[in-house]
Image (cartoon, rainbow, N blue to C red):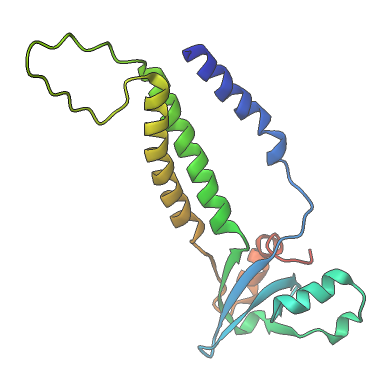
Length: 193
């Protein structure tokens, strides 16, 4: 049983390697830009240029751009220049759900393997007279795996949710030099690269 668990872990580890390769799929990043005049601009990061970023104010405009059936100049872009930006906060669409599911999967798998490796409990000795056996954990290895997997899966999902809710913060402080240094990193989050 331990060998089977080890083989399964190795299989899923190796099988997930091709899924980790980069895809050219365009992703949506919700962006909040804090400007020097203490105002905030919200939108979807569309494009990063040499001296400015372009935000799209609503997902509806992004759907029109995806269709590419209209003139791009008609959309509600908002240009924010580097000298105006104090800080940029980015959050990818679906990051919270993805992180939660990854945490759940890792936690459940870890707990299940621990339960399997712990093995079956030995049978209880025969009872003499009045006996009361109080046990909260299952006695079989599979039962322990499911029990531990559930607990660690919930813990992993909680940790994944916390990690997934963190926004990436990039300080610019009105400096075009700092903006240029962060430009390649910002382009990874832009819809149009």
